[in-house]
Image (cartoon, rainbow, N blue to C red):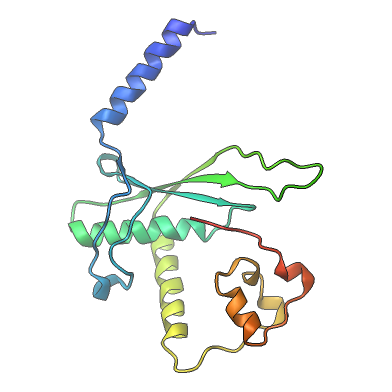
Length: 182
């Protein structure tokens, strides 16, 4: 077991590392929207350019794989703005799980940290999802409501109320807000 003085010295050296490598919070990235198809500016929660890392903070009841796409999008935007040699190959997501408070459960939360590579397959996934969303919104008429077995995303969709007002009938288990994210 380390003494208190040793632990403080280690914390001090970590602080020096962070000062040395310039963690940049809420940095605006201005990609060429016509080239990568995302709006400008993009604002990740933090970037550590010296290590090729981009990060985001998320909240919700469950971690979903789609959270990885935010970091992939930020990486593509950063690389688009800065050009060759400014690769972002790692993502970090700080996830704060939240719970619906009940008589027996308190909404306490502990951070979960997900560190993952931003590789070609994640970038391709981001591009496929982006293209699918663009295809949907570029049609003159809104899409049909998804069949019940394909509505897993309706629980946390920000447009759920719009669809309900247009006639979508959700089952009781589909109405509960599952995830919220920043």
